[in-house]
Amino acid sequence: MNHRELAVHTAAKEQPLIQAFVQERAVDMFLSQNRRAQAGLFAAAAIVAVVWFGRTHAAGAPLWLACVGVVTLLRYLYTERWVRQGGVQQAAWRIAFVVLVNGILMAIPLLAFDRLSELERAAVSIILLATATASVATTSGRSHVYLAFAVPMLVPLALAWALARHDQEATVAAFGIAALVLLFLLFLVSIGRQANLVFEESCRFRYGEQQLNAELKQALEQASESNRAKTQFLAAASHDLRQPLHSMNVLVAALTLRELDPRSREIVGLLDSVNQTLSKQLDGLLDISKLDAGTIRPELSVHRLDQLVASHHATMAPVARERGLRFTLDIVEPASVLVDGPLLGRALSNLTDNAFKFTRRGGTVSLSLRREQGQAVLAVADDGIGIAQEEQERVFREFYQVGNTERDRAKGLGLGLSIVRRLCGLLGVDLSLASQPGA
Image (cartoon, rainbow, N blue to C red; front, side, top):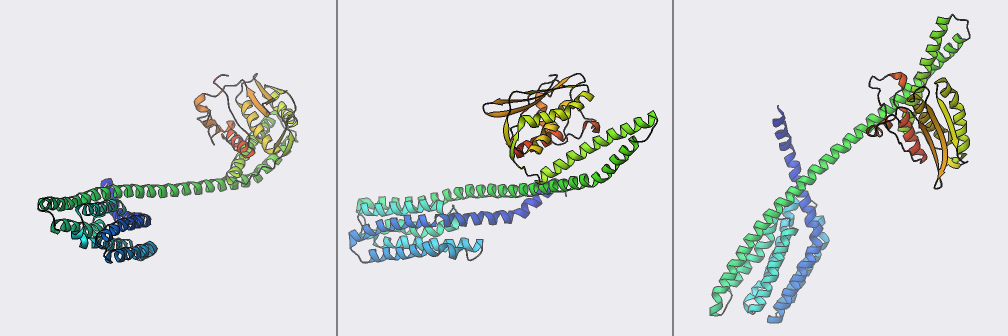
C-alpha cells in the first residue's frame, strides 16, 4: 500500500468518528442554547397572544399561551435528560421532535388570522418569521431539524395570507405575501445549509485539533518516559561504576608508595590523571541524573558569601598554578545571603573549572564579589578563547561543547554548565553570560 492509499484508507476509517463528533457538537450546541431559545420563544408567543386576545377576546388565546408555557417549562427542565438518553443519532431525531412540537404550537394562533386586522396580521407574520430566522442558529442549520420547526409554522402562515378575507385591492398583495413567505422559507433553508457547512467544517477542525493534541500529549508522555529511563540509567551506571573506580584509586595510590622506575612512575601518573577525569565525568552524570529525577532539594540557610568565595579561591588556586594560570580574588565587601552553600559551591566549582579549561597557559581567571542595588553579584571571568553570541545559549545544554566535535573526553562530557544552570534554578539565582570570541 503506497502513501496515498494509506492516507485515503486512514481518512475513510476516521470519517465515522468525525461524523459522530460533529453530531455530538450539534447536540451540545442545541442544548446549550435551549434555555435561552425557550425564553425568546415564550416572549414571542406572549406578544402573539396579546394581539390575538386583543382582537377576538377569545378564551383560546390565554389557554394557548398557558399551553406554550407548560411546554416551555417541560422543555426547560427535561430536554437535556431526554435527548441524551439515547445515542447521538437518536438524539438528533428527538431534537427534531421537540422543535416540531414548538413549531406546531406557534402556528395555532393562525386559526384566528382571518379575524385580525391587516396591521395585526403583519405583526404576527413578522414575529413568526423572526422566530424562524433565529432558529437557524439554534439548530446549527441541520436541515431536518430546522424544517421540523419552520415548516409547521411558515407554511400555515403562507396559507393564512392566501386564504384570509381581504379587500379586493389587497387580495393580489396577500397572495404575493404568501409567496414571499414560502420564498423566505426556502432562503432560510439555504442559509441553514451554508451555516451547517461552516459548523461542520469548524467541528472537523476541532476534531483534528483534539487528535493532534492527543498525539502531542502521547509524544510528550513517551519523551518523558524516555527521559525518566535515561535518568534511571545514568543514576544506576554512575552509582555502579563508583565502586570499581574507588578500587582503582586505591590501587593507584598503592602504586605511588612503591619504588618505581621513571617510566613506571610516569605511567602511574597518567593512570591517576585518567582516573581523575573519569571521576569528574561520573560526578557530572550523577549530578544530572539527580537533577532530572528531582531528588536534589536545596537546604537554605544564611551564609557569608565572601567567606565561601574566599574558601573556594584557596581550594582552586593550586589547580590554577599547576595549569600555569593566574587566579585572582576581588571581594569588594562582605555579603550574607540565604542559600544552600554546598550547591552554590558546586555551581561555582563548575564555572571555575570551565574557565580554567578554556584559558590559555599564562592567562588570568578572576573571581569577584560585589554589591549592585542590594544584590550580591558573584562573577567568574577569564581572558580565554571566548564564546560566540550564537553559541551562548547552546553551551548550557547537556553534552554540548564548543569546538569539541571530535568528542575528546579529556575535555569533559559537556555537562558542567548544564548543571550550573539547573543548580541556579533550584537556588533562585540569576545566571547570565557575557562573552565574545577572543576576549
